[in-house]
Length: 549
Image (cartoon, rainbow, N blue to C red):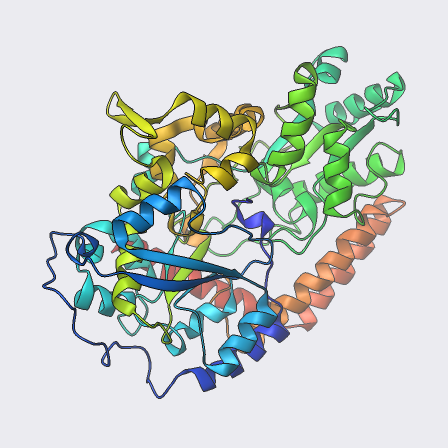
């Protein structure tokens, strides 16, 4: 399973508008949240005790995950069997896209639990379809508020009406960064054998980067299918959170383009002079036949095939974990030719790389819907999975059965750990530990399992990211609470950027790049850019206030 934002399907403004309209029908007469109609708990609740320990009733719940690639089931693997044994809750997973969610919203008949991307515009209307978690917790499981949930995360997700509607996975707080174990997910990777063959050159400068690609081209090497090695490749352009490969943010992160101005305001990274300089380096490389000619148009399957056959010398990767399958196939058959992370493009003006670790807003948010048949058991399941105990069961299982304690930390049985690292897809299907991600605390897992949590052939790259990973709390939920007008405009601007970057990468000269950028900047200006930046600055200020509380 893909485990990061890069694999997600993002919502278009049109679909988001349809969903929001549909919410009018979903509100079920309930005004602005509140849990006033909830039945009393069927047992005596206690803030010091998780309610699943007291409540021995059972329930069958539906849990909808709004990603069409999601394909896990519940009850067939070790992890979910243990969770059901503890909580009495059996889950039927459902998956889908915005269209399916839109239909369910319009009908007012929602699954019990709903997980959606944390950047979805739907989140600002959560009070119309979700029961506040704080109300549910007070009624059924106060341990959620007193002990299970992270205090800083709860503060951050408390809305203006005083309620918390959704809880995130992968929410990393300042405390998590201080304790260590936050990994990045971007890497500049090279095929180890070819890199060594050309003398392990410095590729951090425009000149060194270009010279290395030229050196590889001159060697005339072939991949596993006998086709010429492509000196440079990157992730396919997709519908994910980085629609344009490394050219939305990954390149900017590597060369340390700031997120904020010196006075703490939104910084326009795409027009940054150093970013533009490096962009032209990539354009020149394309003109000289040093990059994958299909970079802009290839599909995920095309890209996977190239990685599976070792076709690239450089693979600039904005989603390391998303490459688990092809990288594992290639490296397990060709360990001496595996892809490794090295220092990639760096700033020409002295800035340090700044790779994003997951921030306080996490990746997804999970809600208990107003249609929930058994909100008591739904809350117990959410509390269980958010708590350190439940998270540890989901990740490691049962002590003595699937793990042992060593130096105060759980350690998976050797056979399970080997399966996880060498055949991740079989591990996910049969064992499932660590893979039911939707309320996972990734920082806790990192402190418990460290680099062993990752597939064998991605461990070096994941470890490489740690030195450069920084929190970017001020930027959390940047575009989630935009006005309708700005939400529409940001979608239009993003679409225009996708067209612009495709043009730029096929430009024949630097002046053509400058013309394309100028046209993009004008388009932005004509489509509400100033108001959008103003609203982003408002969100940045709101984040700073919440973080300072």
